[in-house]
Length: 130
Image (cartoon, rainbow, N blue to C red; front, side, top):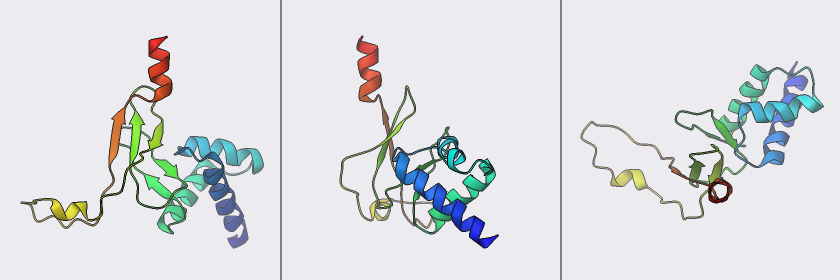
């Protein structure tokens, strides 16, 4: 059983690294099931969460949409297209300790931050101009 989980986890990690597109569980599952037809979606999701907890991939929680999984683990920002829903990396420096600048009146203890910008991607912008 341990070996099977290792094989499954390796296949899930390989899929995230192959896709390199902030993939959803559905997209990752579709790729893994081609190589390992008996794997369940629950197993893929469990392995994705374990890989994220281990720091091997990054889990992005997208408000109002499915979680995404990123092959890049370093701190960086993202943008989501309002039309197609795709998620992209944003080319800007990560702001270290941004949470220390928050004036919090509620006693919240901040441990980090994720920012998701929104807009229209180049593909959707081109389609709307056509």
